[in-house]
Length: 305
Image 1 (cartoon, rainbow, N blue to C red):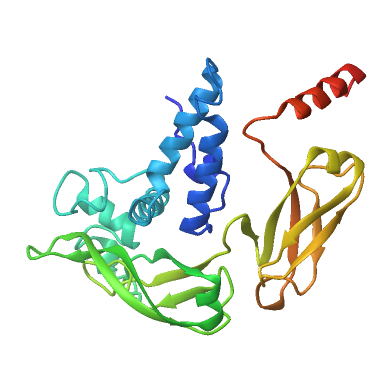
Image 2: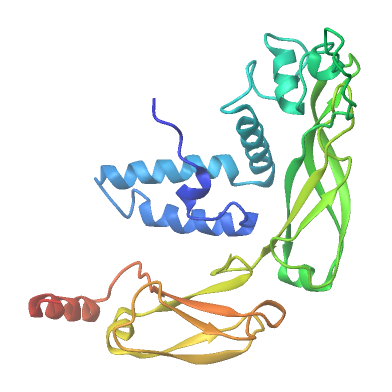
């Protein structure tokens, strides 16, 4: 059985992408592979279903949080916990104590990992208090919010004891303060807000700030990328295209002859808070060609282009 594809890779976004960027990537891919635009094309239909399935997993904030946290758990367990999802209630079940031991870095209750007792007169080692695992959470903010800073709320799931004393996934909402001008990808550690440990201290929350760069924009590390739609004729022959920068300023960008899709032009101090901005070339997509455009393409075809 083939492993499921990573939904982030299917949609062509990074794991640090904002929810808004994921939605925009889905719309673009769904439009590209939609059956109405690709009639009787089985490959396009399969890609469309793959894109839809990926979006179902991470397309809204709640689904994405659950997917990311389940993936985090699966990575901790080396492929998944026995007994099912750690968010469905973890009291009892086959292998429960083994799962708890793996999750929290300890072993069975009363076992040597917790007891630390050596036999045969061995010297007793000092014990460190066990700690629950950390939780990685994303916080989406707009560029304006990131520039201004302020208090922001976010929700996630953590393992906490229920009324029976068993650990189960519970929804938690916290509030945190972001400094004005916070950078995309900044990680804040919130101590004691991670998963509880049955015999120790809770882990931490690692909160990653994800700045939504807006339509046709994304991040490459801390560099802002903006897609520039260029006509094919301008790509080949050169020309100028209108560009609106994040600041709202408009201008004409000169396109050199024989430019390629994916070429970038860096503009210093034109990005977020005066950082760099990379303008990346992409082709303009047309839903339908008029007759004049079709005739021009036919002539190019006949000329061998």
